[in-house]
Image 1 (cartoon, one colour):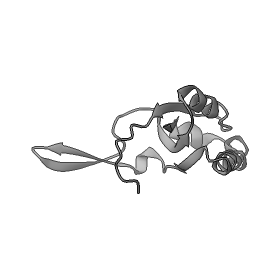
Image 2 (cartoon, rainbow, N blue to C red):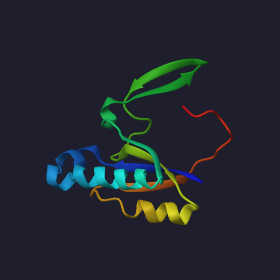
Image 3 (cartoon, rainbow, N blue to C red):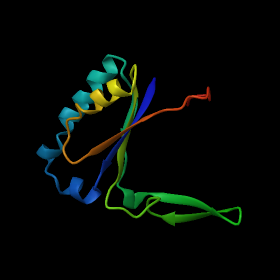
Length: 117
């Protein structure tokens, strides 16, 4: 089964951490170890939410606004796609995330046979 990891954080709190506290080397090792075992299929860090744009529809026309979908202290800072036998296994993998300052949501991916890009 495939699972989406949503890496949720406060951009302000993340940016306030020192380079040592962010520990990108540990994060890179975590992704690399999981990729080598075939457990992680993809994953990327996202730019801060202040750089996002949101598209909504009003009267059947798109309306673009600055910022993320919802006003919140926390936003999605990155994501990963995991391969795991079940939700408990995916949660166990997520529990090994090495960086401070994140909440991780683990959500099953619904596969309707759509093409992958």
